[in-house]
Amino acid sequence: MFESLGLTDTTPREASVLFALALGLAFGILAERTGFCLRRSVVGEDSMQARGVWLTALAVSLLATQAAVALGWIAFDAHRFLAPGLPVLAIALGGLAFGAGMVLTRGCASRLLVLGGSGNLRALLVLVVFAIVAHATMKGVLAPLRTGLGGITVDLGQWASLSALPGGAWGVTLVIAASALWVALRSGNRVTALAGGALIGLLAAIGWVGTGFVLQDEFDPIAHESLSFTAPAADSLFFALAATSIPAGFGTGLVGGVLLGALVASLFAGSFRWQSFESPAQTGRYMAGAALMGVGGVLAGGCTLGAGLSGTATLGVSAFLALAFIVLGALGAQALSVRSSAAAGAPRARPPLQPAE
Image (cartoon, rainbow, N blue to C red):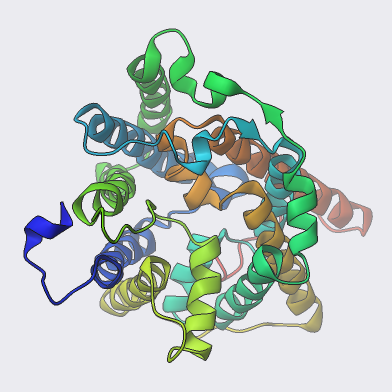
């Protein structure tokens, strides 16, 4: 469709950067205002409310994305989320690592990006370490770990997509979306918070349609992608270091847009605050969590947005499996944290909220 837009002086890749910038700007504003974060919805003090917002986004993302598939605008047949060879060990270990890491850093990658735009220096440093380790896992010294674990696969054939289940794509979509909305409506959230979650879910679908339909050119194709922050964080870091030799892409525009959107939203709301580390122990915990998220995000095939929100909208089994192991990793890390605090003589209640949230 790109050739019909009349953008004769702009390539699809260049247009995708501007598109991602707008997408990220909208996400940054909405996520900053709603506190959108999977970690909060799993182990946060306000987990019920946070879960309602997150599940609303999941339901809308599923419905809107599958509607675009039904209309023939996009297709995921050749996408990695629907590859017949499922790297089950990489997804399991990666998901557990990412889930544990986001508990240690008190925020998933997308949440930390939003916090960074709101003045949180801890979050910004975590993102830098996260990006470096992710890049090392994709193309650097940790790449053998990725290829070794990724080579252990289970052939799912047609069962790589949940659309192969009875009821087909729409049957599965309606069941998941209805269940998610049922929980969301019982979460005690205000309508405005759920509406914000719905708009975030819509952004995921818009990302798929934008890169997979509107900006597609058969002579100059671009990657079919949506909201995701593992590879984009690494790409953005290295673009910042070598912009003259590494062109910006969709991920770079997305990361820049989220930072800008969160900054604008926090300034207008009066919530912008400079924050930093409080102790060496806290710094060490955050750096460890960043490293775990960097490795885990690559092995699992995406973060809580890349696999969790955007990925599950494809109905790929690998995305749902990654999301499940991320949640398990978060629950396990939180349980260990509470047990360790109790063993040290601290109160058995959950640790109090910190400014990183």
